[in-house]
Length: 596
Ligand SMILES: *[C@@H]1O[C@H](CO)[C@@H](O)[C@H](O)[C@H]1NC(C)=O
Ligand SMILES: *[C@@H]1O[C@H](CO)[C@@H](O)[C@H](O)[C@H]1NC(C)=O
Ligand SMILES: *[C@@H]1O[C@H](CO)[C@@H](O)[C@H](O)[C@H]1NC(C)=O
Ligand SMILES: *[C@@H]1O[C@H](CO)[C@@H](O)[C@H](O)[C@H]1NC(C)=O
Ligand SMILES: *[C@@H]1O[C@H](CO)[C@@H](O)[C@H](O)[C@H]1NC(C)=O
Image 1: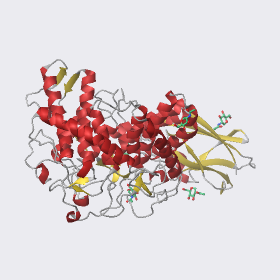
Image 2: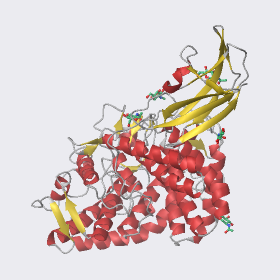
Image 3: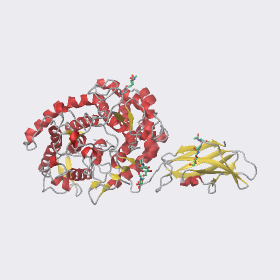
Image 4: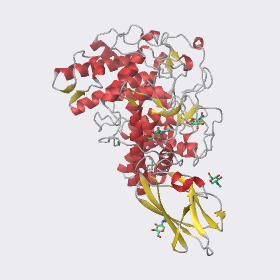
């Protein structure tokens, strides 16, 4: 959010919310103050989410059953009463996790309503296309599920991946419960459409989660990787071996590409690449990525930028520092090593370019996730990459591994817990009346600003509070993953094999011909000669009337093709439509066609 001109700060009401913990409080007092804030705010945040879900949420008149609106405001100061695929998926991930952890059985009806709404929305033709021609990348819809046809930053390719991740969590839970019919008949077809979209489009640019930059976004790439990884397992469980291999292959390619966002010289993640110039690249995008791809089983692994990995901690250090100093007057004078209010990125100007509640909470959550993980592992490892992060808490700390029995471990974890709580305390300090969480709070004095009651802000509060309490989401298969040294591409049909990863496709075309007439093949990718009748590949007639050729095409490539006849220099094409196929991730395939 949000892709529109920013409004005047003077429109913003000047009432300050409840006052929270003084940042100069002693450690004990602050922690108990954060504890009590969390216990009052948790039910408010949960109610804030439910109020924004149709059909009966208190603040979302006109929203269809299962529709999650981004916020109730319909025009003053901003119009957020739409359903974004991204926000909706992130919000339902929180509710589904609560449900599957046995914390709130009353959520089930809402969950199935959300799935039913998602199934309808997938089929709504919209300015990005239809369900089969890119429409799944449409960022938002009207709350009555009609398409939003105004100008917008589209497509946004994180939405289908996030929706698949959320739905997969539910599917895995139901499968374990033995409820296979709903998974097979309802959830898998829903998830599969989103995953096929990811499989075919991950290597294309699109708009980032802030809807501003048309490029490659770290957040988008990372959640696409996660979705494909989990999807491959689900596909296998559903007996769809071809999709399982295709998703696995593409997941490997995406994981490889993910590494290219890391700048080893600057020691942070450049959140937008392949476009998005004019910014430092330091962006809370990367911190959100770390929490939304956290896998409690994956230790502090760097390939997936786990919250306690050295790369993610170095990045946390750099992103937080980019908000220090005079950028936000409310952060002025806060010393290094203490929490500050966090925005999206320092160059932000939308609605005044203020700090956001959800990014400040995410900055805490990454640290809570890291603390959870260090406790589980029983040690902290400091590398040259993460050294500066740790020196904030203990200037003399050196590269090495510190067991949980060491005093260094105790010092570091204690200080990092206090630091993390500091971000929550900032949210507490600047929260709206009655615990309300808007989108932003002003850089000048912390007054709530922009969209009131942002559903995502409430969801971000709940996940941060859970992480602090050691309640973490399920594992998704990140453990042990390493990025291949050489990356392959799949740009959805434009050719490009990168290296190595190809699959052999045997094309069999049954066609009767006259003497001297021959059958050729051409199509939309380099391997099929890019629709050139002159360069078309000749088939062999050894098994006449079946004509054959085997072609190596990039693994996972989606392409179109046709057969042609050549006779005495004259070319005859098969009739429309073009044939189309998506290559599997590995192995070989035979396709059987007949002349038409
Ligand atoms: C399976 O799960 C769906 C969704 O929760 C539910 O509607 C259905 O009743 C369940 N079926 C069985 C047999 O438990
Ligand atoms: C496509 O993938 C290749 C290989 O990882 C990468 O170099 C390129 O930047 C990617 N492009 C996009 C738009 O994702
Ligand atoms: C986004 O960038 C791609 C090329 O990277 C371009 O094809 C597309 O038209 C751009 N979309 C918009 C809306 O600018
Ligand atoms: C088949 O593909 C070619 C090349 O992209 C395109 O010009 C043609 O319109 C396509 N035919 C149909 C029926 O879509
Ligand atoms: C095509 O026919 C071959 C036998 O000639 C068979 O092995 C293969 O499975 C068929 N392919 C498809 C996609 O049905």
